[in-house]
Amino acid sequence: MKPKKYLGILMGLLTMEFILGMLVNLFGVDPGEGESPTIIKMAFATHGIIGLLLLIGGIWMAIFGLKATDKIVKKMALTAALGILVAFACGIATVSLQGPAREYASFAMAMGFLIAVSTTGRLISRV
Ligand code: HEM
Image (cartoon, rainbow, N blue to C red; front, side, top):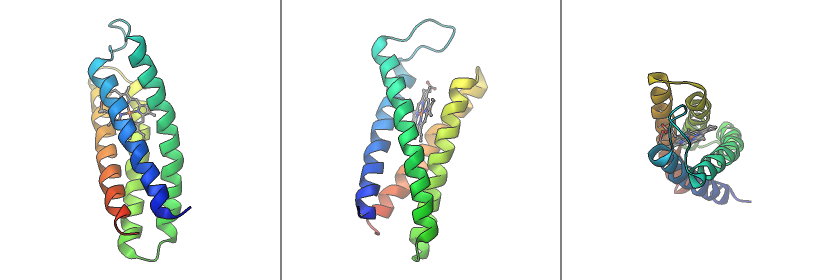
């Protein structure tokens, strides 16, 4: 499969991850404050599964970046891989922490997402 196709799949996964993450953020109930609706529980589970797929995609992205000869492609691919890694780690932190630390981790997850989606989008038009 050509890199452009892989990058397109990653963009699709990132888009789905954003939609599901926003659903959980806006309509999920914080732990200790009650139960989230079943559909939101399902959205959260799918968010976790896609997070794992993105982690695999991030590893591919890092290898792709390390192998790239074009300096800009290399920089962008490694930045995208880092963004995915940060988002994944902060996702785990979000569900493990409580109080303000949980909010910081959630914010950092969104920032990791932003870095990943913007660099992947630019990479698609360069490879
Ligand atoms: C590459 C992986 C991931 C990306 C790109 C990502 C992205 C996002 C985004 C954009 C949001 C909505 C904004 C926000 O609340 O921060 C979100 C929410 C959320 N994500 Fe992730 N996420 C990833 C992995 C994970 C993982 C592995 C978990 C936990 C197993 C997780 C748990 C959550 C939770 C609990 C929320 C709602 C946070 C809240 O209500 O404050 N995410 N995610």
